[in-house]
Picture 1 (cartoon, helix red, strand yellow):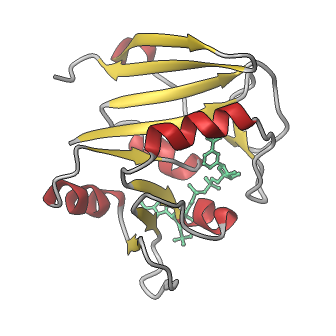
Picture 2 (picture 1 turned 120 degrees about the vertical axis):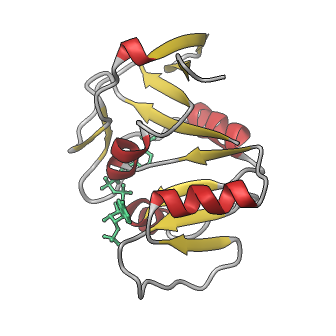
Picture 3 (picture 1 turned 90 degrees about the horizontal axis):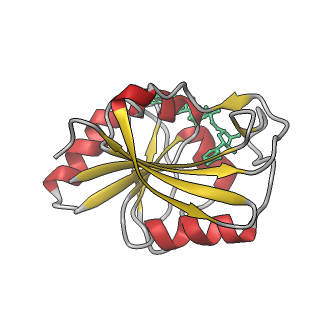
Length: 162
Ligand SMILES: NC(=O)c1ccc[n+]([C@@H]2O[C@H](COP(=O)([O-])OP(=O)(O)OC[C@H]3O[C@@H](n4cnc5c(N)ncnc54)[C@H](OP(=O)(O)O)[C@@H]3O)[C@@H](O)[C@H]2O)c1
């Protein structure tokens, strides 16, 4: 099972605002996110889920929280109290790949655990307090770069990955 981070990062490394909002709305980037993740489990932190307000359609949504009493009533949604438990669950259910979709706290932990990263680098800076963790470039190779009008998509693969 491939574990993949997918994220959009502004030129100044910002990925979101402290109040949960995304600082930009770029239709083509949302479409890329949807097309890439559709049909696969998406794993997110509780704060990102609450910003979305409801599960993303056509995907198993997994929400991570330390609150053992956290409960929301949606189909296609499961709650775990650790990232590792969510990975184990997906592994046992034979998913070919899963996507870690944020936010900042979850990316910081997942960056050491995932096999690949699909990073949209936006061609602008943005205002916000939540940033993507530092990438140790020597751990990764860039396999592909796709150029779009307002962003470039970089596909990173961990160097020791099979
Ligand atoms: N640009 C992008 O591609 C992108 C993508 C996604 C999100 N975002 C942005 O990112 C921001 C949200 O990020 P964030 O860092 O504030 O929050 P977050 O990562 O979405 O969620 C943090 C929460 O996840 C839970 N959590 C974290 N680590 C855990 C662990 N090891 N075990 C169990 N639960 C754990 C905790 O929930 P509890 O407090 O309930 O315990 C924690 O408060 C928003 O601004 C959003 O718009 C941007």
